[in-house]
Length: 163
Image 1 (cartoon, rainbow, N blue to C red):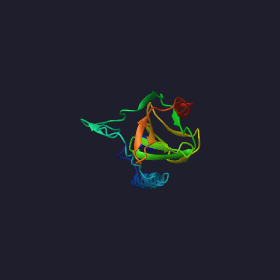
Image 2: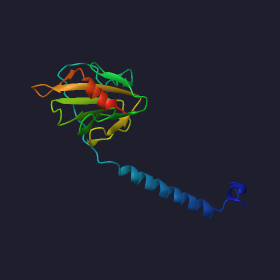
Image 3: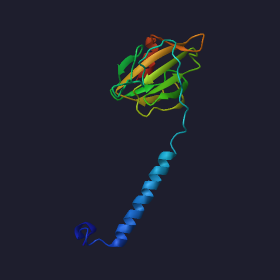
């Protein structure tokens, strides 16, 4: 007679206890693995030169804003956004990352809408994250250290969404 055909009444308590302990062991292994994910990258705060009330991360009637003035929306359809240059990816809030590069030191690119983004150093062309819609904003550093939204260059956008 198999374990399944005996029904719950006929199960041997040793089998139940063994299954329970194995489940606990598996759960502990999964929890430890989850804790050992990539090293955390500190959140970056971007001080904008323009003062707009609504920014990505703001809330409207309980809904999170994921784009704002100055963002370009691109349908990725689940494909990856890529690093346009050698650079660094830092989180800015739960839905956005900032990309900076020594190749374009006066610029910062904010990308929102990516699922499980790759944080830390990246090479040009590396996948940063996948998403349905990418909210892309280009910013230029101002003399006072703040960032002003600017229109992104077409070649930067093409590098970011190239397949």
